[in-house]
Length: 137
Length: 229
Image (tube, rainbow over all chains, first blue to last red; front, side, top):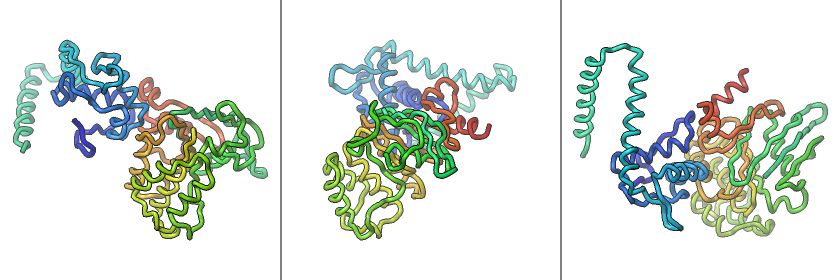
C-alpha cells in the first residue's frame, strides 16, 4: 500500500491528535479503494517506521480502528481491513459528510445563494477532476 | 518510572532547580523543554547521580538512585566524551568492556543504520556523525531508561531526521526515554509527554495527544501560553 517516500504519506498537523490523523489516512485509503476489504495492513511497528510516528501512536490508531470495526486482528495474524460492507460504506459517507461540512462552514460566511454555489462547485469540481486525469501517466 | 520529587539544586548562591517535580514513564518518550539555563542538563545530571542535589528525591522504579544505576539508565550527554584518538570500533569495544548491559548485536546494527565507518577516529568525525555515534553508544546499552541531552542540537537536517527515526523504531520499544531540547520543532509529533521548564521550575507537564484532543493545541501553542504569559 504505502512505500517510504510515498507522496501520499500524511503530513501531520500538530493541533489534531496524531493517532486520529493516522486513522483518517486509513479511512481515505479504504474509501478510495487503495485498501481493499480483507487486505492485510502493516504491523504497528512497520507503520510507526513508515509514517515516522511514535510506536505508541501507531498502537493507539490501530486500537481506535479495531474499536470501530475498521480493522480486525485475529490471534497472532496480521491485522486486516474489515470485510463488513456496512462499515466500509459508512466510512465513505462519513468522509464525504466531513468534507462537505467543512466546506459549508467556510462558504456560508460569504452568503452565496445555493443555486449559484452549486453551479460553481459543479464547474470547479469537473475542471479539477479533468485536470487530475490528464496529470496521470 | 523515573520520578523527580521536589528537587532543589544550588550552585553557590545561584538556585538552578527550585522544588521541581515530574515523572517519566517507561515505554514513553518524555521531552524536557526549556530555553538554555532552564535547568534541563542539570536535571539529567542529577538523575544520573553526576551532580549532588541540595534537596528532594529522585526515584527510579521506586528506588533511590545508587549502585547499579548505570546498568538501568543510559545517559547520552550533549557531546561525545571519548578520547579523540580512539576509533569508532575501539569505542564500541570500550563500552563492551565497561558495561554488562552492552548489546554488541544492536551496536553493529546501528553502525550500519547510521552508516558510520568503524575505522574512523573520533577526532575526524563530523558533528553529525559524532552525534550519531554518541547516540549509538547509549542506544546499544540494554537499559530500561535512556536519557539524552539535546540530541538534535547543532547538527544538519538529514542527521536530525535519521536520529528522529530512532524514536519511531523498536530501538526504544518498552524503554523510557527522557530527552531535552530547547527547540521542539520537528519532533513535536514524536513525543508522548512534554515537561515545560522555566528557571528551574516545571511550568506545565502534559501528554501531547491529550492536549491536542481536549484543547486543540499543539505543543508550541502551549509553550507560547506558558512562556509568554
